[in-house]
Amino acid sequence: MDLGTTITGIVVILLCIIPIVLMRINNSKKEKNLLQGLLNLAESKNCQITRHDLWDNSLIGIDDNKNKVFFIRKVKDAETTRQVVLAEIQKCQVIDTSRTVSNKDGNHKVTDQVALALTYHDKSKQATALEFFNVDHDSLMLKGELLLAEKWSGIINGAILAKNA
Image (cartoon, rainbow, N blue to C red):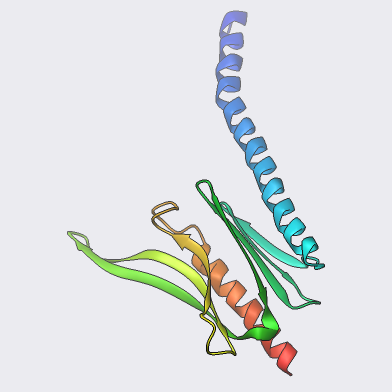
């Protein structure tokens, strides 16, 4: 193998690797900025995030000591932020809006939306929805959002039960 072939091979490998490394660095910076936004939101309410999860352009976190949940979701140029005081919440449940689609391979379940619905003790208040996935804004397929919503439903319901015990 001559020097020219070796150099060409190295250049081709670098041209393949560099974009991947740059994408990872960019995603890491974006995730840090999103997390800092969640931490700042909590701090502005004199709270501290003790547990959190981040996916796509969304974050959810909880202050276990003050029993508050914070949620941020960025869709295109719009940002939705929510703060929920768990003392006001009766229950949390996962909303999985799905439909069955038939094709030549058979019937398939297609999920259109995944959200957490937080129902208040005060029946005059409308339930708060924390959207984890929406096929209109996100990819066409779930990437763990349903499992994440179920996890946070358990965390929130556990915090509600612990506070009422």
